[in-house]
Image 1 (tube, rainbow, N blue to C red):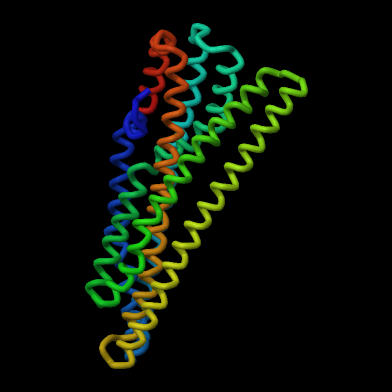
Image 2 (cartoon, rainbow, N blue to C red):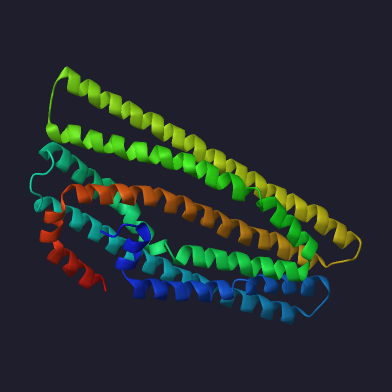
Length: 325
């Protein structure tokens, strides 16, 4: 197996990643157009323009968002497909490697780890392959496009929004690092539980050991929940401060005649278009760090079967790769 998660991603199909990236670029390029159409619709209605013009702008808006929605639908299905291909490859690879192993590991440990990887660990790692490149490209592109448009409309209001989001650059990686440490502990506990189930030992000591592992899993999961939802709370608070900033500055500019009401509406809509991709980027970063930990554990487990067994399975690995490409 490749040593890094991104090496595995490239193994699963570089041409597919390029195609998905192209769709992502196409989407974020036109992301600001609906904002401009919203601004023009509101300004046309409040400035006394003809109703026919308003209907034309609304029809253009609906046509554009419909085309965007269909493109996103195709992108999501495509990403889901490549992710499932990667999941299938991981599961088959673990099974092939375990068949060719030369009894380098105790049977209960080998079967327990294999069970954990095939049923629980392969899916999130493989699923990440589909979004690994296209997701940050799409969401970062949307952020740049929307922020650039808002700066063009009203620089000071846009700057206020940027300042509100800036603290997240500090606390998000810090909290995620703490989550990652717990995820590694969680995976180890799940593998130990699987090993205990494979052994089929029924004794007071065995039951007590399994109960202790389940309690450890419970404690780790609760710790992850607390960190995860604390991060979400802090991010939501930053977002609401952004809305408050728009109301304060936008209200001042409208009252003093320095901007149109349509600009404020565009900013309110634009903030939601910033909030969603920013949250998606944070989720992607969280998934990246989590799956790097999981992939390293899967890779180490595969290597524990021994180089001889993996060499013996290489033909089947290559056959799977050929199907992907």
